[in-house]
Image (cartoon, rainbow, N blue to C red):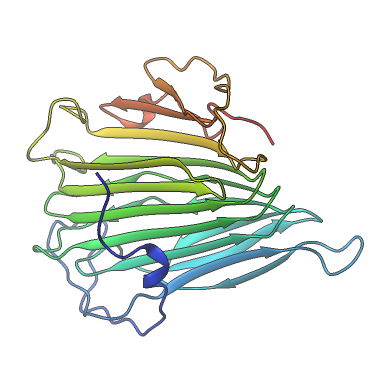
Length: 281
């Protein structure tokens, strides 16, 4: 089912942000953030300015802060750090990532994310990824926890240039310890110049488990590994090989690449690793 809501780029606006109060990590009380335009966390990796120079990395902070960890002539590593309690009712995290042709970026999360009870107010997490020709983005996200009472819409939109590679791990958990979890809508839209590679939308609620979706499971761990087409016209690609993952399902996408998914009761039981099903550079 396709969403009719505006795409992520429409939301890339900066603005002030105000917090009415801040919960501690264990609080179950609902906390609301005053309405505001979303602040965007931006990371752009650009080609070096000269021979032997490292890649250039430009960043700006939103609800997440971006910190450069390392860089060399073709690759950068950037850590994303929460700037405060999040996600609260009314929050919108927007992450815009751009990787220039021929460059590579590894994104790491410092601490997982908890979406708290927002007293009926939706919160959002929107990631917009642009990966140039021959570039690579690897993002192994830490668990994203949807607490009881939370209402979350999480979208990932990626546009790949010719030969661009994307490896993305997303681990979603319904509820903290002792909770059934809130409601979440997860949407992934990955395409290249030829057309769609992967379009998926999933809706689940901890209070209303649906057979054939998550059922009684509380953890969904997914590794997506795809490449942009080098062909000028659509053609069916042979599935890439993926290693056996105990208890996980490996889906071979029609245009090449894999989606590897595991459902289970706890994150530490997942057999997936960030490079599961890797298609290679």
